[in-house]
Amino acid sequence: MAQLFPPKANSVAKTSLIFGGMLPVLVLLSGSTITRSPANTGVGVKLDQPVPFSHKHHAYELGIDCRFCHTSVETSGYAGVPSTETCMNCHSVIWTNSPLLEPVRKSYEEGKPLQWNTVNKVPEFVYFNHSIHINKGISCNHCHGAMNDQHITQKSRTFHMAWCLECHREPEKYLWADANNPDLTPKQQVFNLYLKQQLDPKMANMSPQEKALLTGQEQRTSNSELIAKGNELLKARGIKKAQLMDCGVCHR
Image (cartoon, rainbow, N blue to C red; front, side):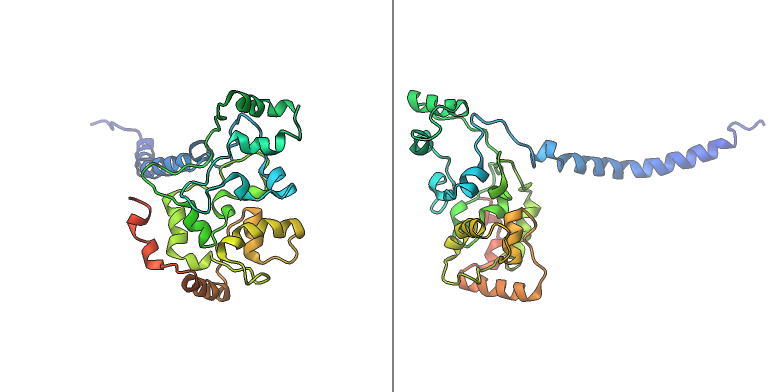
């Protein structure tokens, strides 16, 4: 009987088996790459806004306290978006004819709030409280990136569950205290960081944690001495580590 398949069929069959085994892995890797890309997460994407508001100009260059605009960040789960009246506190006397601020003036005259496009948002099934984090000394920059250096606000973190759990599992690796200002409360420390940068723009006298926060880098430390201090801060600030891992903390 004549041979049905040529010799090269063996190579084709082996290659097919190899690619068949690799296909599920490639599909999973491709799916993971797509779901974690900026196109899906929005990280690094600058959204169009009715007014090109610059955090770098207002918070860093002018030194306006975050709480002037985000009035409820210390007391509420929601940080708050400034009303048009808040903007007009300043812009009724400065840059009064700027074309870029025409939407603000129109909003004020018509009594209609500006429609900002949401940059950072957790899913509806997740409960996040700004005030709890602020009052325990968690910096705005930890979640929002280097806000002091953003002209146009962008999302800086994925807010994936795994990312949140890194801090909830080992908060001692993220907590820090300002050694130069030991009398500050954790909340005061959060906002004082931006003032320190204005006084020390080159960050020459800042700790590694402070530099990491102000430059938008990873704040997590592996230094055993800093971790030991972090454990002390857990007790001092009344943070119950075991409770942070309870599902009900974020899913209510």
